[in-house]
Each structure stands twice: as structure tokens, then as C-alpha cells.
Amino acid sequence: MGTYHGSQVKIAVKAGSTPAYTDADATTDFSLDYSGDLEEIYQHGDRDPQELKEGHVAISGSIARNFKTGNFSAAGMTFHAMATGATEFHVAIFPEGDALPKIDCEDVKFSGWSLKAPLKGVVQETCKFKGLALVLTE
Image 1 (cartoon, rainbow, N blue to C red):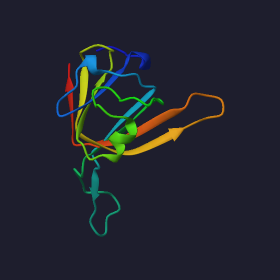
Image 2 (image 1 turned 180 degrees about the horizontal axis):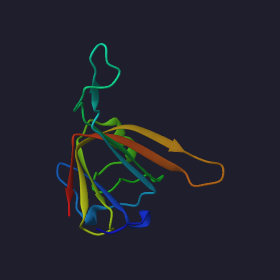
Image 3 (image 1 turned 45 degrees about the vertical axis):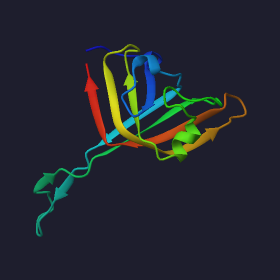
């Protein structure tokens, strides 16, 4: 198992099928969150939980890049269009900056878009998403 630096990471987005390393586009920040939402089961008369039950799974994340008017990756559209459309995408993360290992976030829908224009800095846009499944390929 290796250690990776953020500057190695490549991100790709594609509609319909899993994107390849060659579909990667320039980004400045990426986050991916997986939550299993465990639930504590209590009984009257006892302060301590008696059992842990698996709850709902939630997969979400965001991608940021320097603002461009062009399309992102193999998605064939801008961040804003991805966030305001109902198209399903696949998001692939290449931590090593090469084809493998690869993390696929499948059946993704983008749900939010924001723009940041600091007085001293580069204009950036961010797109938020939610997904249905994560697959790790090594």
C-alpha cells in the first residue's frame, strides 16, 4: 500500500459508464464521504446501548476547480450544467495519478454548485454530489 500526495490525484466524470484515467481533468480540491449511520438500540432502565444496528448509507462529495467556461472531463458539460441537470454520472478518483488504484463512485447525481471569487486569488467553482455505491479497484 502506498502513500499518495494530493497533487498526484486525478478526477474524471462521465455519463453512462465508468470514466478512464485518460478522461481526467484538472481540479483543485476533492472530497468523498461515506457514512454508515450506525444506530444505538436502548432499553428502558439502562443508560448504555444494548446493540448497534446498521443504518442508512450516505455517499457524498464535492469537486472544485479553477473556473472555466468549458466542459469538465468526459461529462460533456460544465459544473453548473452538471449541478442543475438530472443526468446520472460516474466519478472516478485515481489517487496514484495513474490507472490503478481507482475508486469509482457510481450512479452519481450532482446537486449543488457554488462560485468563489476572492479579492486576492483565483476564481473557483465547486460542484457537490451524492452517489449510490463505491467500488475500489486495486
